[in-house]
Length: 371
Length: 197
Image (tube, each protein chain N blue to C red):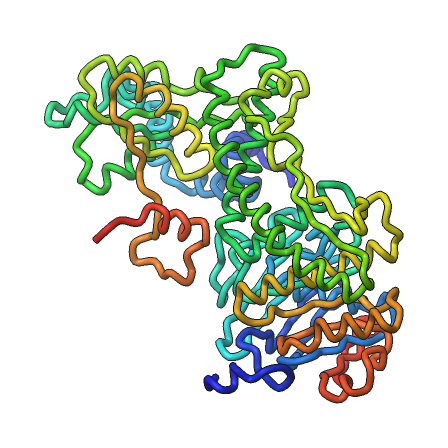
């Protein structure tokens, strides 16, 4: 029963509309069987390194988005010697059951209340989440491809239409590239290229439009969060369209290259700190601050979009931050009233006041006990 | 496990069929051994007859027993509408609804450069040939996949300049389906192609 006053209450004590009330893992990473009953508020996952904390965060990301964290492959998450793995989450209030099954040799499958969904991505939006993990540093330090993946994953959570454009675009791109390679040996008439190119320019145009709008929305929040975390240096986001040209007009060049040279699959998100491109000129500490600011902006955007705080998955975000940044980050993330999962080596890293109001799961060599 | 030669030969032949793995092939082979000889003979004959007597209809390219298929030789059907499908089995699906009274055309595939399939591998030339006669509308009923949509686009660009109307089957909510379980892609196109009541 959600009364009106309850949902309008601010801060701690507010029960979020969407939260995970139960998480079950079967043969996922190092866990053979695991059942957790998290609280709707702050959940601390504590324990020494390499004991299975990140796996829990990853399992949460999987039922929320249908995919693992950045850089992980599905098969790698199946427990050694097992053929399948599954993660199931039950939502509080509605008791909706979200399941993802991983299987060696085939594609993963997502289920809603036990009924198969056409695609794993069809889970998106049922339990919105924003994750912070160590591999996110690549968003700033990595290649353009890493930043495009960041854009695509985050926007897809908010917009199924974007995901649809992306899926069609990627497929049409593969097809056109195959056609380009074919044209290197035998001439292919323009009329055969045109329908693929028309798909690319329609869906590609929609991708660019949405990315540009989303980055515009993100930049103010990101700059603000960055100022609070980093103290003054200016963070600036800009969508960089590498080539404005039409895909049709690059056909001759593309045939020589054997791949498509223009389109949103070549664009980049340029992240500047104090006017310099962070990828090349920022120190690792600066890059880390930029990533956290970026993610905080994603969180704010998701909050506006879903009109409540998404589930926050914070994996090992404290280890490299100094004390003042750590407390700034905690203030920005934990005071929002949504469900939070946070991993740390020692529970008292978060401060004593928070420990009191949180549920603590102690993780040690694949065993989890509630404290 | 060693089988008598005719048996392992049969298993090997069955295994070559699509969707039949070694286990199924073995099960089918043993089933055949238990069948009355007359039934086996009938099965063998219908396999040969089907392969030998069937060909593609010279008009619509559907699988046919004679020079022209049943639909094409039916004088009551409307010559001015042609429904383009990718596979012969799609005609059976359309015919089940008993509503469509026009003609058909089978492409035998969809454009897919990744699989090496271009227009020259599809029955496109045969379709254009048919449009010389009085055809008012071509309904493109290819699957709502990227390849199906792109093939439809290709045909539309080819056919429209000839002054023939080109339409595409609508995609949207499955009738009797539940909104909550519909995949987002279907729901999106259902919204895009909504219509006024």
